[in-house]
Image (cartoon, rainbow, N blue to C red; front, top):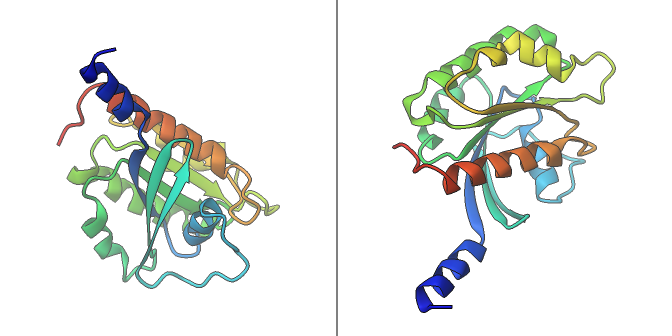
Length: 188
C-alpha cells in the first residue's frame, strides 16, 4: 500500500462531522430529543430561550446539533443558523393538531430559504405516545411532504420522552448525508 492510499484510508476511517439544525414550534419536543440523543435526563426540560448546542458521537459520526427555540419571537433568528447545515430536523407535536397549519407555514418558509435549498429534512412526528396524536403518515399528508422534489425527506414517528423512533430517524439522516458527501460535491 502506497503512502497516498494509506492516507486516503486514514481519512475515510476518521469520524465524519455533521451539522444538524433542530427546529420546530415551541413545545414540540426539540430539546427533549436533543437530550435523549446525548443520553441526558429528560425529566426537567424548560423552554429554550435562545439555543442549545451539543456534540454527540454515534456510528462513526460527530453530530453537532443546534437546537433553536421555537417561540414566535425567536423564529426570525433561525436564519442566523442556516449556513453549512447538513440536515434539517423539524419536530412537530403530532398531538397538537390545532397548530398543524402554523407549523406548515414555518416549514414552507424553511424550504424556500436559499441557504437550505437541497438540504435533507427529517421530520419527527413527536408525541406518538399520546393517544390523540396524529400518525406520522397523517402529519406527512397535512404538511404536503410528498410534493417535495428538491430534497430528500423522511418522516419518523417518535416519542422524545421514551426515545422510541429517534434512533431510526438519525440513522436515516446519517445514511443520507454519508451518501451525499461521498457522491457529488455539495452545491454552495
